[in-house]
Length: 445
Figure 1 (cartoon, helix red, strand yellow):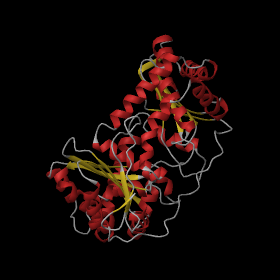
Figure 2 (cartoon, rainbow, N blue to C red):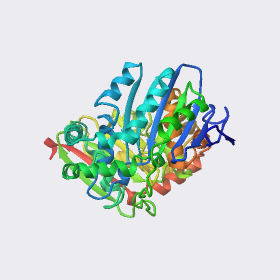
Figure 3 (cartoon, rainbow, N blue to C red):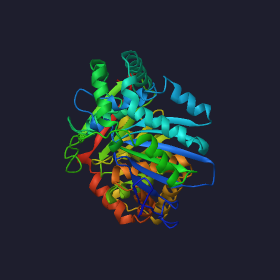
Figure 4 (cartoon, rainbow, N blue to C red):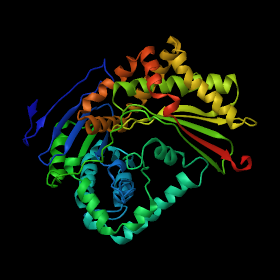
């Protein structure tokens, strides 16, 4: 540890090439609580600035669903010293790109810029952290509410199978659980809330002591710390920040749940879902390998047995994946779409048979090696850009309190054994804990 010129304590960390993160990691905390993480890499004159705010849809109280996602939009609509849409114009006009995302666990904002414009990116982010509320108007709020409504229509309501995620969450997590509702939220809640309610939400969560600022790329820790102190240091912290509602669940569900939807879909489709373990735990590492063995690509069990073998599922619409939620047992979702002429009963029988085989037929060494190779490739693809590195470090700093913990995710995946996968399947994939969501074309009703 070393003490910087502005009085902060820095914690350098170099996990090393033997881990899943061979670049250096330095971190500090400003006096107002802002955590700053820097991963220096001068191989290209590019930096990514990424802010993880510890607020997502799981923090939303009853009657305020969709607020975190709406702020993803509002944060581009101007702040104290930046006019509406000017944030985007300044970034793109200086050769950068930008975006933002929201999920149940967090909201993040990020810019990738030529490194000579690092200061501009930090100033822009600081201005909307500390200066959005004065610039938020009723007109802006009403406009962005309409944008979110259109997004809901386009992504969830007016596309085949589009509302599957909304329905699965409601079936997987009980009423009142912070993961029960989707990030897109309720249009009724968004319409009912006034300007002052949204201003209060921003003041409560968009604060330096509820944020991790990560910079990856062509910048030194000393440079980043000095700029962070200059632009973020005067922003007042907020206390106390209310915790999210309790997400505790004892484990998998004890009773199955089932829903069948008849609508404008081209073919029968089935989703099977189970609550497993929280992201970041050893159990979820085993589930990650399990999901890859079960449903990732042409070599997976689902593909080999249902698309190539029995030929009852469409090859392009079959698979399984975990959703990396960190504060409650995260879901594993398995899906298949019927080929022409295949009825949904046949498809469901085939799908459940393959899922059950993970308990009765241990994964082979070939399956395990293939899954680990796919996960290794995906990991390094994520870290191949400064944007991917900044996002990964921000995640681990926010959710686990240590950005350097990211270095150990890949080694932990690679340490999973065939017995670990079987145990994960035995624990999580029991029929009595299963959620089944079925879509049927209207003509089959």
